[in-house]
Image (tube, rainbow, N blue to C red):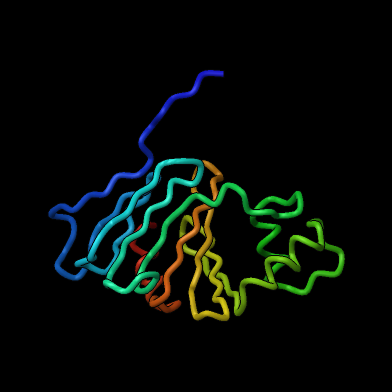
Length: 161
């Protein structure tokens, strides 16, 4: 099998960014994030991790973007899995262990639809927020932050539609 290294993460700061936003291109999507990060960390690999850091405190004030290639869905497609996580499904097509495991980590889930995507939003007991969506290649993209609210995510993600 041939392996080809293709850069999937590209950070662009151009005239399309405004003083109120920072345009970040990741896996074919433009995200309009808060401006003036302290640093940007990128790690190519299986999940192509990108971290945008907004403060000097370790593990605080960040936005993370990654491909979530190893999410255990219990042999379900992502749409079915998230539907089952968000709803009390007795006869799920997904492995019950996968659904319970996810619910044990992520709390307060909701979903919203735009013209192109379904976004699945969750929080954790540590007040972190997570958004999952599948791109056009059926890859699961995970966004996470310790300071963004659901309204912040919705505002930012409406712009990539």
